[in-house]
Image: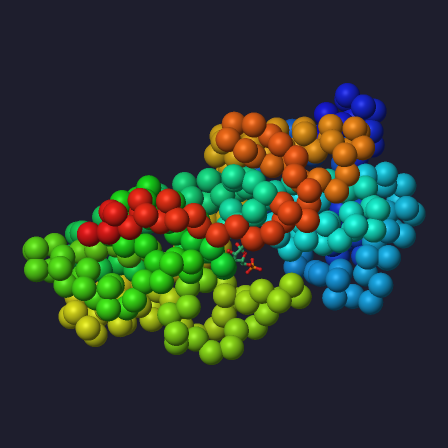
Length: 320
Ligand code: F6P
């Protein structure tokens, strides 16, 4: 964002705690020193929240007023479908806003990839491989749960990359009988260990009501009680007799040091967002299409994107 200052003489204001910061007027001036080692850091120095302005009385109006008070000409919103969905609503009201796709879930329709995704996949891959090693040593079935509230992008990519024996995602149904059959087939072939990756958002049919956030999304990563991993592990052990262990990777795969692809992608997206704002192309989301950065309308780009059939077909062909 500081290229905006160099190139265009802009002053850059950081908004703290996501939409909560804009509702409450919590800003932070951004200085060059803030960025000295930012490229290699995970998370956000601005902090974030799950506040939904659409759930607050006159939320969007308050945001507009606070932007005006702070002298903000253009807003760059960085986030997933929730953040960018609100940005799209602001754009409808004529607010000058550009979106940047950022979610480890990679579930935004307008972009091939959102930054954070491949770093999370790298981290999950490494951890799944460690679990596979210990699983082989102890001849155990290892069930690993990864984030992915509505989509199986992380589960399928990390599962493929780590050579998992099976991946279970929300988009394509896998029956418990299929899981049991796979473990038993491996036992029959003398391979007692197996690695099964399951996305947190998969509905295995045992969960009751889960608390929802202000955007109406189930807080699966916060849910008390049984996880998908522990439910499956117990089920497998009972049905097959295989010694089984469950691990929930949860938040451990978020906030780690970004990989080079994510660093470059985030930099290019930020640069394009700055250019779009200066060119007056508001209401757009900058996005990755192949090796190019493109712009798509926020309302379209911020919709949900689910795991594609082709990735699933390839992933499935390795189940064994
Ligand atoms: O939306 C991204 C995500 O990482 C989901 O995969 C996960 O369910 C959720 O965030 C966790 O949210 P929180 O950090 O609020 O627990």
